[in-house]
Image (cartoon, rainbow, N blue to C red; front, side, top):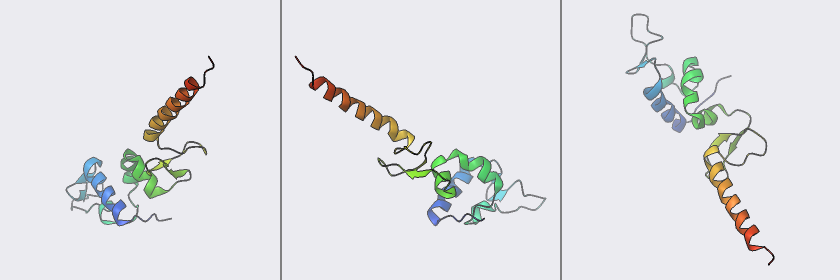
Amino acid sequence: MSIQMTPRQRRKANALIRKSCCNYDGGNCIALDDGDPCACVQSISYSLCCTWFRDWVLPGAPALQAEITKPMGLKRCTECGAPFLAKSNRAKYCPDCACKVHRRQKTANDRKRRSNTDK
């Protein structure tokens, strides 16, 4: 099964390869080097073909990984719209927004509870 990337996803993946792949050397792949320089296969392809990239580099960018691999449980945050991997079927928010929304809801609930006191 071949996973195809959109041009936007490919640009993000190439930036990630240049920044954090230990086998990337100026457009060449050290792992494929057998004496002659060999182009980095992942950086010139629209498909997800390099196992090193898929297993070690891509997990460094969880949002891009979720966007490219589309695993089960992928949802969009209702607050910011970013894709995230849901840990349960009730998840509505990405981890970044979950803290903010929880604090906002708790504040509103406390305010409501304080205003409804009988004197």
